[in-house]
Length: 262
Image (cartoon, rainbow, N blue to C red; front, side, top):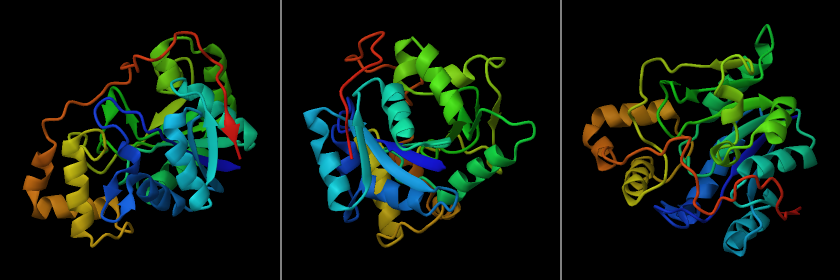
């Protein structure tokens, strides 16, 4: 069972409520889900949010749109994703973040295919690592075995490892077997994620260019930016967060947390 898990929450220091902000008529989270759901490699897809009251709008969105929702720890996202995967009997977990409204189903399928076809088998396939990235920020896809996720859940003990889910798998090269796939060229300077007002402006302009549809591919976006290079300047100066940045609310060592699932 290959399960795509979209992690999403309303809290954001730079852009509160970002996942429910409008992108040409639909919430950003709806765009993420619709695009990920077109990936042929996923047997199931769900949204994992927190059990905090502030994330009730996400749970309500899921219920209104018949989307499976799991609720767990607010900042120990590793705990949340592990428990969501375990509850849904995942064998392979595909991690997607709710602030990536240009996530591409073909990129997801490629990552899953590489994971399934790897010989010898690997524990994690991703298209972006801290020291190896060629895809734009915002197409981030991570595919791992449930067993590897469980190992991370049991052994990761640093705050950033708990919040960013999979650093424990890729930080030390000899610890797990990891593959990183490459884009046709280096596009790592492009920022297509949603974390600031500047990001929101760019993403809204992109969706307007495609008449509010979300069936365009990431390659279509590249062509658009080749025609209109000034678009990329809208958020070119936004600093990227690193995988070691941690939510100040995080309580070190917390691996538990209430959860509500359906």
